[in-house]
Length: 125
Image (cartoon, rainbow, N blue to C red; front, side, top):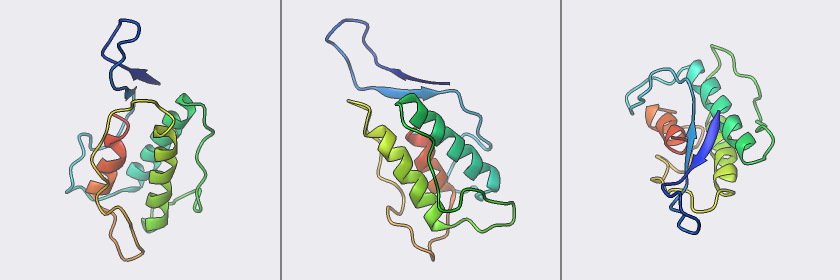
């Protein structure tokens, strides 16, 4: 379940809006040292879809819609997940700011790390 919260109950005094979601995520709290696992990808995709649904967008689509346990973690999968999440965040007025993504442009030679997982999660907490 996802909700958007602000710090004010008074009309006209809205603060920045923060998304709040009930998510289950392995290894939470995530830090930059974790090894990215299949569960991180599937759980992050589910969280992105939950966020998108909350703002009225359809579930995200991906070049690689299913990822198996032994598949490599591809930069395209992570870049698309970031883009789909950012599409949804851009629809929320006054949403709280977050730090820039670690390695804003991922390439096929960029190893996907815990810091990349954290970048997705920070945008939904």
